[in-house]
Image (cartoon, one colour):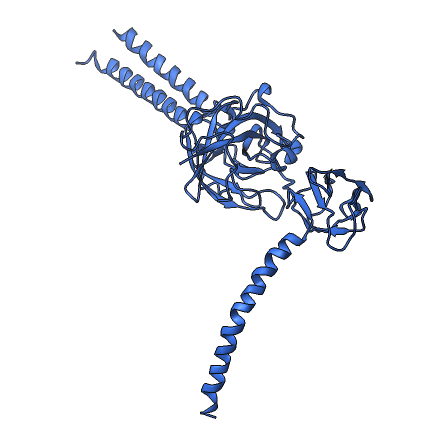
Length: 179
Length: 231
């Protein structure tokens, strides 16, 4: 057992040395390919209810033959029309449609399909985020309601001073004839 | 001599009583200011709806921008969380904290105990990145009276707003509109709606205060567009 362990470890290490870079290569190749494989570009994504959102599709494909002449966006899942015609874009085989998402659309992820006339079908994940429906509460109304307590205090002090002076004057007046 | 004394005493008592009465009934501060109608934007339209505004940076370049960085057209900035806010026109310098939504569907705001702190709506974009970044601040608080955004309603088209981000860059925005909107008719889409050009919205409370509900009936919203960066 003891003699076998280092051998197994050595074999494992060799395997790791061999497969590690290979795996890394595969991953490095795979990730850009995956990122580039979605032919649909959505702006903005995430979007929000009531927001004007643009879908752009590239109808080119290795398998489908020929150029696409038109493309349609299936808007049913988004609460829109079933077949929304797309306009030719700036690049060859590119089609673009801008739609306004319904104000009542629920937050979540949507995957509307796009059909190109050359047989290519594409879809992309659109994330819809809710927009706050309630206005913020920012303030407690102090400046609109608070009365000036300092003014009251000064006023009361002034009135009190007057009263005391009056009493003093009256008492002095009474004592004067005797002195 | 005695007559003068009596007159003085009577005058001081009358003044004192008048002052005390005024203190009980007059407001210590004036209700928060709000922008005139001429500054208002159509509530439901997220402006600019697409692309750069016609009145945007192309027309002129503010001299305040750092010359080395103020190349036009300015490029939108990468996502970076905002930390501080400066609005020289109304002498505001404030810290920014990141907050999201409350369970009821209203955006969270800083506690009233910290009335000079503002909050950035963190489910939305960061200031300087494409889209509308939203910052809230209190208009007043019992602890201090006028709070950080008390004078927000005094901002006018052309005033500049600096937002310092976590990556130490400062995004500069220019006001293009301001309005007072009823809370029941809050322009959610115009405030949070996506804009291709980076925009900023500053929001506080305003309008009439309803003592029964303890709420202002409206919100002051300032709309600003990205014009470049400093630092």
